Image (cartoon, rainbow, N blue to C red):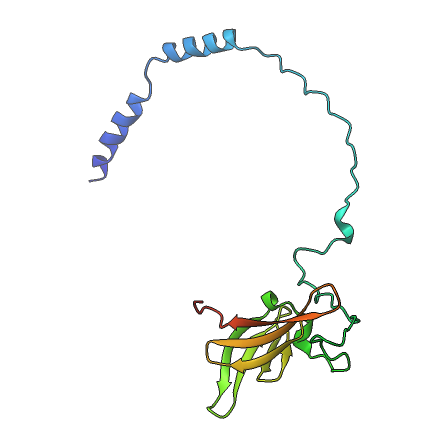
Amino acid sequence: MRWLWLVPMTLLLTACFDDMADIHQFEAEVKANTRTRIEPLPEMQEFQHIAYQGAQSRSPFALPRREAIQERFVQQRDCPHPDPNRRREPLESFALDNLIMSGTLGDSNQLWALIQAGDQTLHRVTRGNYLGLHHGRVLAVTSTHIELLELIPDGAGCWQERTTTLQMAGSAN
């Protein structure tokens, strides 16, 4: 039985010893038509250093800083204005577009809204709390939104009242 594998092996080996004249002829043609000289590398231009100008800018990978808030403001007597002696709350240093209403908790007596600030901290607010850059006082908290009364400076020393809504994240307007 051992001799059975010997027959195909012999046939296979004899097939490898074929005439290779055409391969040698092709090899000679390629060698005759091929340039052996390699072109020199191009001249390298001298490196010019350009100083980085964005070192003083905010890194795009760092969280944004809290918003700049006007601490002193001019008041006139015959128009609404914010109380300058009121103690400011933590969420008043964020613009409304940096605040996300992420949920509510409470019952029918009192409902609290959960607010995620731009610095990834979570706060709870209810009626009477303040948030946003424009002295936004919370008027009402519902399961879908928060109603705010903001005081917007008009540039002439007076303040205009504006009602704003902060929607629950993912809810339609």
